[in-house]
Picture 1 (cartoon, rainbow, N blue to C red):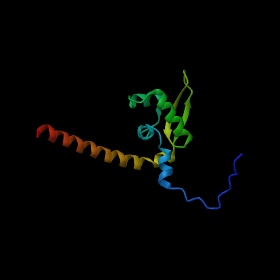
Picture 2 (picture 1 turned 90 degrees about the horizontal axis):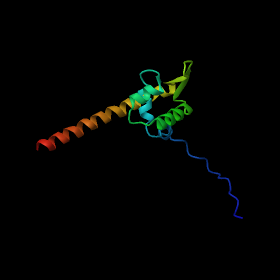
Picture 3 (picture 1 turned 30 degrees about the vertical axis):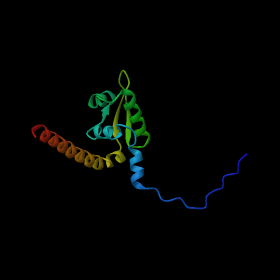
Length: 123
């Protein structure tokens, strides 16, 4: 039998806001799902069509995680067969400027990479 664990008397450090936001977006495809929901509510099949490289299993997992974290709302549609649509919550919408900024930088990186490839092909 080991020694008992003593309670720490040190106050834990404050949580880093950046770490908390990044924790909301963890998991492959989470930012992409938020990006796709930025326009309007989408059904599962529509999201799969919008993101053809994501598997149904991963999309389902990301939607559940984002819903649990309060970023995505799921609304059951009373259709036959039953269906649901997903939309961003107000908290999810607050992430859009950051995701748009990241996408903007990504576009610039792709353009630079393509320009470098063209120079190599010509040179």
